[in-house]
Every structure is written in structure tokens, then in C-alpha cells.
Length: 223
Length: 386
Image (cartoon, rainbow over all chains, first blue to last red; front, side, top):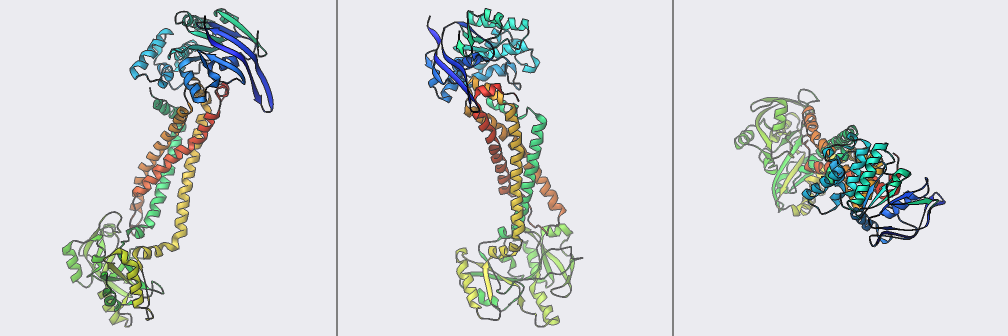
């Protein structure tokens, strides 16, 4: 199967004051299309950094990252922003919904960047909320939803534009066991039924079990 | 949902803070508008000046008179259409606090040179016919409740004695930029009494008002008038009415400068109030901006969101301030004797300046938060703990 994501010789370090802190060291990784990959590792191992690089919200110091045929390391800021809007759906640990917007409006946010009409946007939003099972809560604000429901809205927002890949950073990290199960089941469905390529960072071995493949990072190196 | 909606929702996220900011801006705009109105009122005489009017006065000082005999000689200069004249009368009505300008004028010509004072023809005729008749502006008549036929007693000071003037005409200012508080009576009436009671003071004219055919000839005609009386016992200084009026307010230029300065300090205060609100708001939303960027929103979108929010707040504050400026100026113009500020109204330019200031402040106040939002990387933004 063709690789959806190809990470080749990627290194990344951060500067804190005058100290260079190496985070990733010469990472090479290939993720096939339709894969559900779990990235595991202890805190500080660089898994979130690798996820950010794959999602195009950070840039490597060295190496290349090709997602769906595009070398995203070579894109300018605005090109990268446009690329993210069409190719990446991001799911955060703490949901990161905008509190002043309803569930519907939060899901609609990424669609505002498209050329879809209002009617088409509404259809997309309702479809995404149907997938996550929250059509009855579309006019609720985040504070009126439980943690699990908020994360489902966040997933609906991530899939609303029908992106090429879904990246999830500890998507169950802030949830109780039952809600976490629901979210993992939902991610599994998105992978299986909607053929979404998913890269998920997690600490939780039970979450990792739901993925097809698990890779471990330790001290910036892929095991 | 449009991005505008998000902008408005953001602006109203902290309702109390936004309300207080809008209130702060509106108070500052009211203060700005009011001060500008005072400055405008101060310059009203200058702004009222007509380009085709010259004023000739004694070259030594305004307080020294000119001979009445100059009138015909000035009138013979080519390009001069009408020559009128006036004396500052002074005097006291009731007590010294009841001030309004009182002037002895040439009844035949004064309204020819001041067409902006509109007198009904029958009243003008009545005024011209009666030696001790007077004409006053409608604002003055309204302020004191004067009406046609009333007798106004004035205690003279520059022209000693008891004087009585009968109201025979009330003029209407052509528009709100024209002074409606003037009080005119016959120069001849005053001159006759001077002849009888204070010989030697007859035939004195305070200044001449010269209406010319072509405003472009004002410099030439002024020079011709002054040359005419060079080396005489009363040399003249002729200038445009505007320059003449400016000479009056020159002594108060420091106050005007100070008022202007304060009005612009107020703009600075608005900037600080709104800037503070926007910095706090943008800082609180650092993570949200990072999320928006992650989703694909560009720098331009964030610029629109933050600057738009700032503009919404400043525009609301500005609009409220402008709305409140009108009643304040109205109350002030009622409370203060009309003769202090004969022309006191909110000028369109004041509205434009106040409105534009609020908008410029809205944009400037957003610059720092916008720059911060754009400079913060997505990764740092997502890690931000406010």
C-alpha cells in the first residue's frame, strides 16, 4: 500500500534561552494510507513534536515530511495554513473548542475557509455531527456539554472538511474510562468505515491497542 | 456563521469589560467633541468672515477712532462697493454680567455689508426711520425675552449717560454659523449726543467695514486705503475681515492651543483604554488563536478577527460618544449666556474628527495584540496557559 505519510531523516530541536534542546533525532517513518498508528512513549520523548511536524504546525530542522505527495517542509506559512485546512483534521487532548460558539458553529469553523455555500456548509456540519452522534446537541455551547461530548464535537470539527489525515494528541487523556472508550470506538469507525489515516499520540496502552500499529519513541528516537 | 459573527461574539465575551471600555471611549469622545466645539466656537468670528469684506481701523490701535470724513474717500476707491462703519459702544444693561455686544452702526449700510443678518424689510424700514431704534439678533431677543417695541435702557460708560433704545427690528442669522446676539443702533444718534454733551468726540468712527466687488482685490484695495491716509493724524490699517477677527483671538491662542492639546491627549487616553482591553483579550485567547491557525486560519484572518473586534468596540464607543455629545452641547449652550459663545454647535468636522479618531484608535489598539498573535507559533500557542 502507498505511504500516506513519509517522514525521512527528520530532526528537531528547540532553543530555550541559549540552550539547544534536541527533541527528535533522525526520525524515519512511513504511514500507509488508511493506517491507524499510535505513537507512544514517555513524557518528553518527542511524540507530540513528531505529530505536530506531520500535521504541519511545526517545521523540522532537518529532513523531509511528505504527506499525500506534498513535501510540507517546503511550503510557506500561508501555503501551509491552506494545506492544513484541507488535509489535516486535528484532535486535541483538551478539545479546544471555542467557548463562544455552539457545537454547530465550532464544527463549521474550518468550513468557513472553503468556498462552500451556507447550505452546503450546513449539510457538512450536520453530516459530521451525525457521524459523532451529536445532532441533538448542535446548538449547545461547549460549557453545556460533557467532556466526552466536547471531544466528539472536536472530532466532528476535525472531519468536517473530509481531511486526508487525522492527527490526535492524547484524545482520551482528559476523559473518564467510558468516554475514552466512546472516543476510541469513534476513531476506529472513522478509520474503518471512512478510511481515514489516523496518527494518534497516547500514553494509554489500552488506547494504543485500538490502533493497527504502535510505534514507541524514546529520547527523540523511534524504537 | 461568518467570521464577523465570531468577531462580535468575541467582543461581547466579557460583557462588563467590553461595556466599561465602550463607556470609557464614549466619555472620551464626548470630552473630545465638546472641547473641539469650544475651540470651534472660539473661532466662530473668524469662520463667519466674508472674503469680500475688509476692515479699516486706526493703525495704532483698535481703541483709537478714525474720522468720519474717511468714509467718502474710501468709497471713491475703485472696487469698493459699500462702506459702512461702527463704534464699540459698551455700556451696561442691568449689570455688568449681562454682556452682549452693543454697537453704534450706520443704519443705512450695515445690513448691506452683513447680508447674513436677515431683517424683515418692514422692520428694517422702521429701524432706519427712528433715531433711537435698535435691531438685535433673534438669539439675544430670545435670551432676554425682548420683542418689537420694547425699550432697552443702557447705562453708558464709553459714551456716558443714560441711553434708551427702542427695539424696531429683530434679525435672523442666515444659518447656525452666524452670530445671533448682535445689538445695533444708529451711529448718528450717538454722534448727535456726543456733539451736544462731549464736544470733540463727534465724528469718531471705530472702524470701517468695506464691501468690495472682487475678493481677489482685497490686498490691493487694502493698500490703497492705507496709502490714502498715510502721514495723516489717523493712519489706517486695513485688512481682511478674517485677519481682523484673528487679531482679536490672538491673545487667547495659548488657551486654544491648550484646549487642542487636551483634546488630543483624550485620544491618547482612548487608545490606552482600548489597547489595554485588546491586549488582555488577545492574551486570554492565545490558545484559541493557535487552534484557529491549526485549523487553517491565516494571519490575515487573525488580523481581521482582532482588529475587527477592536474596531467594533471603538465604533460602538465612538457612536455612543457622538450621540451623547449633542445633548451635552445643547445643555451647555442653554446654561451659558448666548453672548459668551454666540455660535455654539457641533460642527460636522468635529463629528468626522471624533469618529475617525475612534476608528484610528480601534486599528492602532489592535496592532500589538495582532503582532503578538501572529508571532506566537502554533506550538507555543497551544502550550499557553493563561
